[in-house]
Image (cartoon, rainbow, N blue to C red; front, side, top):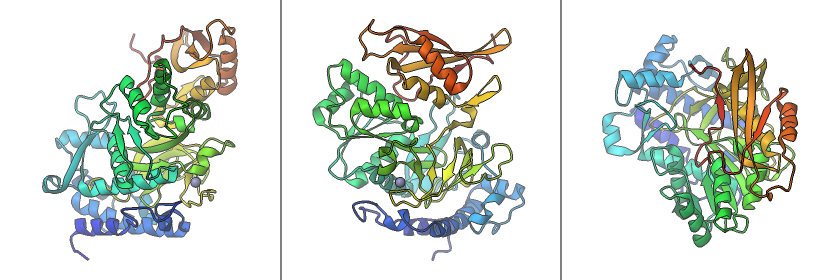
Length: 477
Ligand SMILES: [Zn+2]
């Protein structure tokens, strides 16, 4: 074994890559990792945590300082049981680090020579309004891990050699497109890139080149399907049999899932992660979960590659299994970002009960519920935007797009929903549904909601991630 901590880390991670090039059998890519007893998962996590901590201690000035401030020493973390000693990292800390130490910051253990010798790609966070985005460098070693982990997740969803994929995430500096792209490469699944094309071109690609797997956000799956209908193609009769959705919680919102699956006559799967800590799928759905209709879809967590923790948002103490809290994640495979305890901030509850698919890895019950900073607080009630989305999309007379505005009028918080009629129902064939929608929302949220119906096509169409909620209470005017 090498004395160099970087090489020791790479050796340990590389050694965990069973079936690096092809699946082991017809059900699981890595049965040794996906169906193992939970005690064994914990052992794997412990070995990786201990070395990741040491790697950060020696090679990341940001983490060395953070660990020392917490009173930790070089060998304070020897396994999962010690993880709670490590302080949580929040995104603001990385922002400050990159601003103080441009252009990369000091949180990554990667040196300039590693980047120029083995560098693969630069990624950035999406959706930021800051002039300077947060940037992340990854190596070819990382690329191989993303590919293998992504392939395992896609295989669990049912993607197989013989499929053809169309990838509609942007060919840019965001992690989603590239992680899926290289995973599909490893699986021997050809990729039609929809990344640089407009919707009309993508509809044409699907009609003519007959891909079987569609990769995009849930909002875009709806938009693309409707656009195909408008262009005279039938998404239902298209070659698409499986949709891998990422970037939004829609796959686990029952009525959105039902709409997308009916529109495409295809199974909808969920794939979630985040740029900072979970670049390959942290969460993925199995064939069993997406087919059952008893409860919202549970999402498996890739526990040999990550340690997901569910913490109370204020005390940061772990909650009991099955209870809700915020998601904090440690990465167990990256050469560039083996980050411990990053605050993803999504609300989640987890079960380790066995899944009928045979995988022993824990599941996020009903997927991610929403980010902590998206939680809507109104008149003493708290709910996530997904609750509104689920209620709206249960109503067949209502279109896919909607807008929610929250305002303070006369010291009272008021919520207004704007919807369109469904494009599938002929004009004038039903009574305006405002009252029915208002009743449904009052039942779901517990408060009165003003409903406005606008003509079909009035609301903005979502082509990537949706922005449908506007909380105008803190507006300066
Ligand atoms: Zn399962």
